[in-house]
Image (cartoon, rainbow, N blue to C red; front, side, top):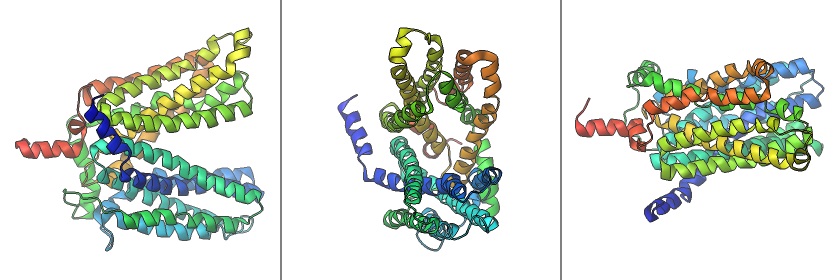
Length: 438
């Protein structure tokens, strides 16, 4: 790395803009896990039956369907703070009220109202995410976007740990759930302070003038691009092998003779630390390597790390080596896999962000992030049959091979030497205007 490259990387990594990404990342992850995990713990404490608790998983649906109302947030500009900050602030204020209200009902007597308010928390949380994702894309330069996305993703997970950790610790200390929810709501104040302090992103492109334009144009603009279908296919396929492998990690590791405690310590402890590190390392590497090269390198690492799980099968379980080193072997495999996953996630999320047109950032990014979860979910549903038919080693090799179609698409959509500006939709539009090409 040249001296200029090192200086540029340091400038990005230690930019105060990364503190903004950290604060907003926490604010984004925080409400999601209130309705995903905290709600279930509260209902379990109240002795609600498992069937009902399972049904309440559906209250997170607004996060999947957020693309439906995202055009409204592209089209209309609130009368204060601007197009992005105004919507963020309104969602955050609504979240404070909804989270506090959620805990004031008794699960044994008002489940219907808990369902309604939980849906409101999900709706406001998803709305905040629409505006925050658009803000991140418009606020950061292309050079900053990779590392900024890495900081954001780690802060998002930290928001999850804060919401779940505070709730569980307080509940074990016999604090009432009504009080816990008020405390959780007040933790959104950090996000409000941040949105009041940061400037509104500057966007040169004109906003959509009508609601119809904000609904139709984002799709027309995307599919009019050269190679639009290939870009969409890449977004659907790049992480599919990684997602398939992760779907059965728990049963695989437990059937290899590891205890649940060992699984928790190694996978949820060491693995998560490596995931955090991978996201940050990947984000920093993108500053120097560029997004295209990063997608290639990190994609290969994801595939290799998936195959490594098969080594747990290939090593004889009745050998002295297994008895002496099985924990170290699992730590190494899990650490590498989570590190590669984190790096791949950072590059993948950054690529999706720069494929959004800044006129319709909220709508296009919400749609892409909703679509990216579909193939992994569908493929994960058949992984059990794959493992039964292929055996564990064959299963992990098949998962690695499943990533090949996405990798092959890189030859077309992001060749090795392609620059960030050539990938960035906004930069390409500027180049077309400057050269007079159409």
